Image 1 (cartoon, rainbow, N blue to C red):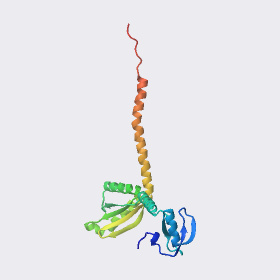
Image 2: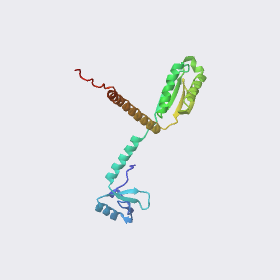
Image 3: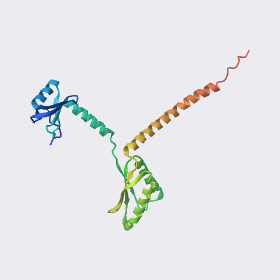
Image 4: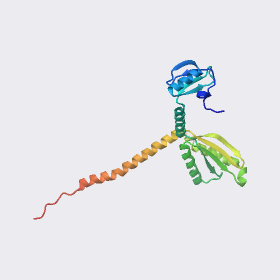
Length: 216
C-alpha cells in the first residue's frame, strides 16, 4: 500500500472536515465544495487524517509540502550520528607491547563513540585454555572502564571468544568534542605562526643601532 495521502479527485468520501491554508478550521463541508475551494485558492485538497469520521482534509500546495518534507528528512539524516562497530583481534598469549598497542586502538575507538568487538583467537592447544582468553578480556575491560563498559559478556564462538564494549559517550558527543579539539588546534597553529613575525618586528625595533656621526 502506498504511504502517500490521497489528494484532490482521489478522495472518495461524501464530506470532509476541512482545514484552510493557514490552519483555520473551516468545518464539515461536502467534498465537491472542498474541491471547489481548492481550485479557487489554486491549492490541493490533501487528506491528512483518513481514519477520522469524516476524514480531515487540508488545503495546501502539496508539491511544495513534499519538497520541504524531503529536505527536512535529508537534513535529519545528515546530522544523524551512526554508531560503528569496530573490531580488534588478540591472541591469548599476547606480549605486553602488542597488548598496549591494541588497547590504544580500543581507547581511540571508544573515545570516538564507537562500539568495539574484541575477538580472542585460539589456536591449537590454546583451545583447551579458554580461561586465558576470559582473563585477557576482563583485563582489557578494566583498563578501559573509564571510557566504555561491557555491552556483551565474553562468550565462546567456535575457536574464538568474543566480547563487545560499548562507549560511555554518545557518538554525537564524541563528534562535537572532536570538532572543538580540531578548532582549538587550528587556532593554536595560527597563533604560533603569527608569533615569530611579531617577535622579529619587536626585536628589530629594539636592536636597531643608532647612526654614528660622520667623520670630519
